[in-house]
Image: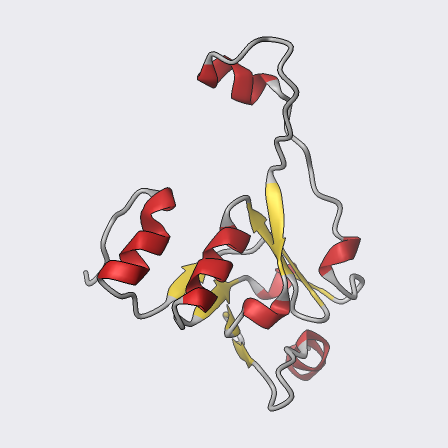
Length: 139
């Protein structure tokens, strides 16, 4: 109730024409500084949300908060086989492809990270302190 189903590539146009209250994506990994890895396309949504002043939230299980990674540059991004793209696009078999499975959204585009233990909110200085949240809520 209250949501609208759209094609993923129409999100920006929807924000521009009809307005959106917030964007919420999942996460496969959240770094200590709040950078977040999720399925490819999440970073694009964050940029479009920022361009339209729409809050961008990440919903993530507490177990995906990874203090061993200081920032998103340390996340190894899986690259999927080129055949996944070629077989569905009718592109030439020898066409070079880049097919990452995930992307990284920098913390500066994230309004907050929602977990089952609470929401990690942006600090007054604009940072997201995942480490402090984990230390406070670990038992």
